[in-house]
Image (cartoon, rainbow, N blue to C red):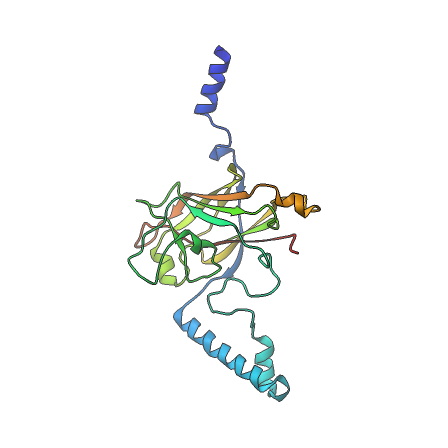
Length: 252
């Protein structure tokens, strides 16, 4: 009995999977997210130019027009799209839900900071935690269906990147604690940058995909991200994340 009490006290005072025990993951840097209203206006002009060329017909374009046409990426519907249309990990699949422990309430009719924003694949929106201080301990949780393709990349767009001003004024995440199915798994170190930050991981999700009917009977699986450290904003304590999205394998 005495040894059992000692064991229970040890587990309580020195819990397993403490922060110090977890592996630390560092990202590779992706593209710089340098957005602006001026850039959006230029995108709209170029998009309209492209559509006019489609109407004109490729065979009727000049050499310079053909060069523009060939280089324009029509898969992006708006300037703020994170990924274009076409083959991607997301095709034909939707994440079941995104939940957060809090979000900042907005005083504006057209702006909000709800959990959905962190995975709407739109650089113009962001999830902002809603507690006093810098949001240490606040969490965002993704729930995936059993059939969801496995994840091999976690991509974080840190801070509020809709403009350089918004990014500087709001706080950004310095470190996230990752839980897989509720189990603490790793610490994700983030740099203080507007670049995409890409964490390449061993496949996460259901590996046995031969029997789809059996796969459908399995429970959802989850990824949870907890704020453990932040870079302080120049004006606001509120900590923002524009996107956490994914790439992977098993696309059908």
